[in-house]
Length: 159
Image 1 (tube, one colour):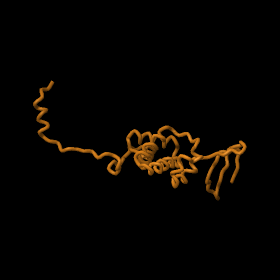
Image 2 (tube, rainbow, N blue to C red):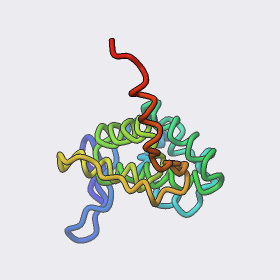
Image 3 (cartoon, rainbow, N blue to C red):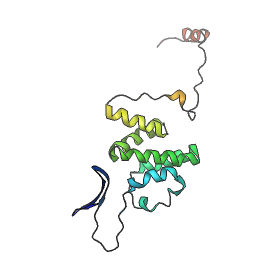
Image 4 (cartoon, one colour):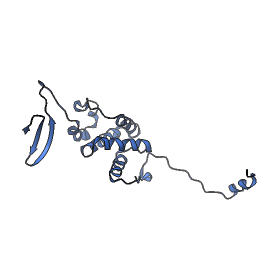
């Protein structure tokens, strides 16, 4: 452990394991929510009671995504939400926020689709969502075109 004026660094050899903001308040507890996401990935029922997440202010789209995931996937929705949160272990909050907003706009509500949109945005490439593999999207019903249907167009006078 190395203590600096503004932070405490925990390292093993040359690898930095964690950085925490230093607090000079008496008996203060400073949490970094990102450090607890791996544990929450295993114990998703603790998501609402997790003290490290209590003061974590995230944009509204995170809560909206969570609600939709839990409605659609029931108990597995919490796990998918934690996986979306874990994207912030690698990517910036703004990047993940944009990906969630894109997913909500497109109606593609899953961790895989949010991650896909995030990576495509970073690569500056258009998304290629595999809608056939999403069991939550309704199947399109397309009827065969009947040539007789065009005959009604000939009967109407042109303006």
